[in-house]
Image 1: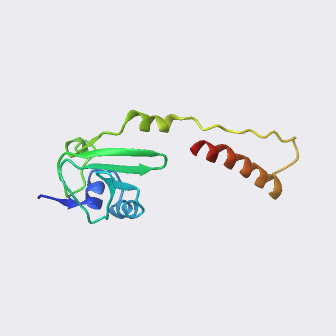
Image 2 (image 1 turned 180 degrees about the vertical axis):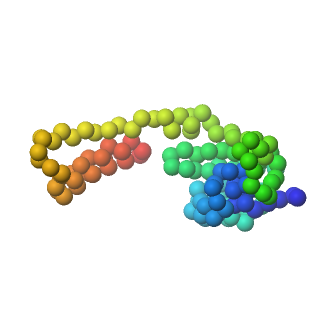
Amino acid sequence: MNDIRLDKYLWAVRVFKTRSDAADAIRTNKVTVNGSYAKPSREVKIGDVIAVRRQQVTYSYKVLDLVTSRQGAKNVPMYCLNITPQEELDKLNVPRETIFVFRERGTGRPTKKERRELDTLMDDLYYDDEE
């Protein structure tokens, strides 16, 4: 066994729950192999570095051995090594700022106009930080 499909490998080492989830992520450019985008049928070789972007974190894995069947969680470290930098993992623990809008008791739910204003405020807060 010299090579294996990228989508099958990511499924086998439990990066994705299903093979079709892995293929969809690869097609939507959320997965790179050695820094370049790939197709689900790309052949993975020992020593390749696979980066998988999930939400705001990019996980990195180094291929240690090839495997075709899905492995148990205890066996995964024999086939791939998680080399994700600590600063990427720290993004998971960043607390989200929350805005509490005070409303008088008995005023009910926000109107459509008030809801749009709240959404605009939240968008400005979260999307300005990313740029």
